[in-house]
Image (cartoon, rainbow, N blue to C red; front, side, top):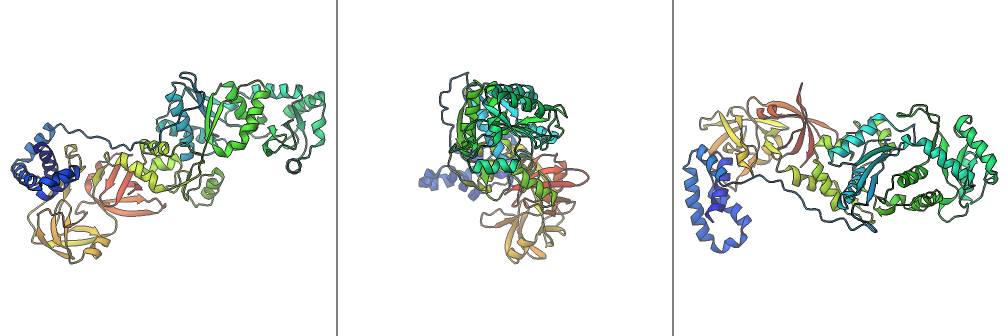
Length: 550
């Protein structure tokens, strides 16, 4: 009992200028040991004895005694609510999974879930995890998108056995296309795109479906060398009256006359998505793919392609599409919003791109814990920002040091106070051993939040770490006693530092902070007391923070 009381008494004393408070210590102990309420008299007597002893010690001895207790800082990690179910037909050391993004935008949290689940399954079965770029549309792929995917997935802590690109395998696609044409399993169609759409809807075949093998091979040669974009495409010969619209003679290769970031103008005929991903899954010997159920109707086609070319289809696990409420994820929509000036960029704090979450100060462990907890169900659900924030909070709260900051300042002057030039406050209330920060004090120049000033005008409040006052423009000193019943507010005094904070709605607010913030490094995650968590985005020429969440 004494050890527990001593731990809380020392922590309270180190947080509040060397003076522990009996009621504060009692509250903490009963929170940890609610059963002790049955012996409250005995505990209160022991607390009084220990607190008096601790308060008689010099600060140096309090620090030393606290360290002797051997208390170590621990991260508070939320345990995932759901574990990954077993994969069908999975064998240890034989599982190969893949993450296959198109580098046409910055990765968002939905990409992160797909990558993470496939990575964790490979890890669970001691298999391999492949990272493959499905870069078959030269008009959309960009260097910045390739780099963003690689960088963000490494930031999340994912590691893979191989980085691959469909653009490295285009000659193999040409060979596969030629095999299908020779076996009369495909044909070259010269219909316009609109005509194809109408015929597929009406389940009607076009004249080109009856080409001979020689005619198709000649047209294929022209497609590779002479014909222009939109003049020809290669279609699989399946069935024009199939119940699944994706199986109605789908296009597998088309002409795109646009320079590709990686291959420049080397190739002008590119595989469509289903042909591209199906063959790569086979060539890379992917055994299992976990992906969004929006691709459910495409599985039949992809397996048809694989079987047509003698490749073994992977086992597909479909999960619900990942949606955060009110957040755009479509690359097209985001690009349009950026071009119209409605968003600051791909890192706009209103987005759920990993770039935006990183800039706001979300921690990779918080994101991963959240994604694992959402599970691998096929049931659609709209997930709230607050849920993601709660998982992130559990990770960053123990590591974020505390500082004072005032956004809408009102200056007050305090009459008849004890002589005081500065106070010391713990960097983190739960970890006194982490150290303290000095806050300069000028009782004639104290700044508090306007909303606090208006709400508590004429009331007894405590300026955190300083003393109690009757709040007014010319406030009156009341006492230095720490009381649980007193409303506590943050404040700054002289030598405060002007800062800017980019909020989660994209607006920028100005504020003044205690001078210790000038020691912070870029990317530090901190908490402004009674305001919320923030990330240091910029230190020079001015201090700029990004608001994370409360």
